[in-house]
Length: 247
Image (cartoon, rainbow, N blue to C red; front, side, top):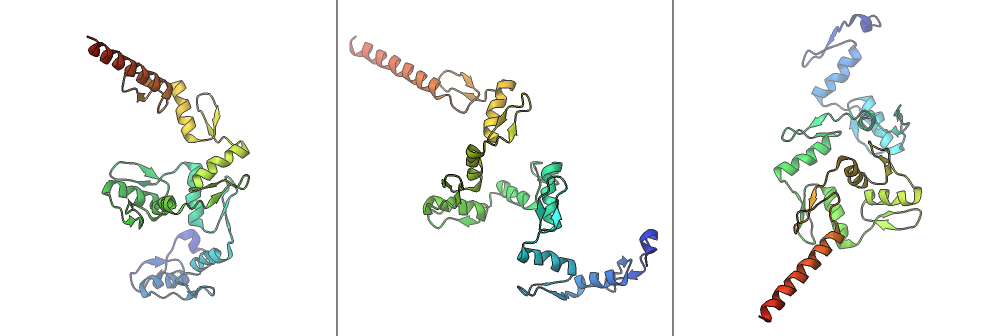
């Protein structure tokens, strides 16, 4: 039997589809796919599985045991699939691609959510205002506007937030963490948005245009400029009407 690992011989065939296997045990386990047999039972919740490995992976959900460790950062996970998904943070791999716009994703469920942007599918309705959302998670976040719920609390100052990502950004006020570095000058920033705005110092990009004079800006709105332009316009209009009245 050991020699088959080297020779690649597969002498045992599935009775249903004739797929070959190296050992009789592997063939029998595979046949559960056809018979629907699930001989491995979870004692805690009664869920059944066709493979012992799948049962052990499931049991980790009950025990919280994390046997799968990332070699890059040391984080541990309850399953190999979760570890594989996590490792894409380090590798940059994005294997799930949208056929409509070529945007790529690290997770298949993120691709499925993205596809709804193209189809316009919105299955989740708010029972308070009838607003519709593409995912249940988006609906739950929206409903906190009505309930006032702020389930994410800062352990440093007890300030609370409606969204976990807002808490994460806030906590950097206390920790001083600045995880986003400029690739041009290495200056660190607390948020990705701040980094994006800063980059324009180097690139010269000015994507925002004043509707009054056509002047462009690097930031979403240069309020000082707009206020100044509005004051000038108001003064010009008042002088114009004053001239008409006194002619």
